[in-house]
Image (cartoon, rainbow, N blue to C red; front, side, top):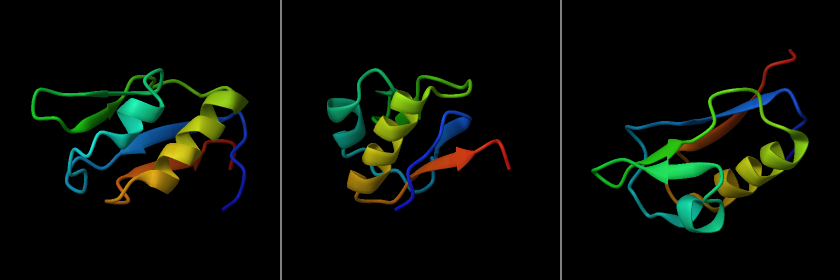
Amino acid sequence: MSVPSCGSIVTVDQDLCMGSGYCVAQHPDLFGADVDGTAVPLLTATLSEAQAQGAAAAAHICPAGAIEVHDTSL
């Protein structure tokens, strides 16, 4: 897994998310849940380096593989 940089954004694929809540529990500053329990990113702007690393950690623990961190500098 590559280390994300500042200049990244995080997305959650709503069709893949199964609502396990791991991302919300581990990174409540980055993720919340909608009324159905599906994860939603709380930050839609470019992430700081620390936030991008947290988002990458959340993507790693997501059992559905619904979280992606995208480098916007490409």
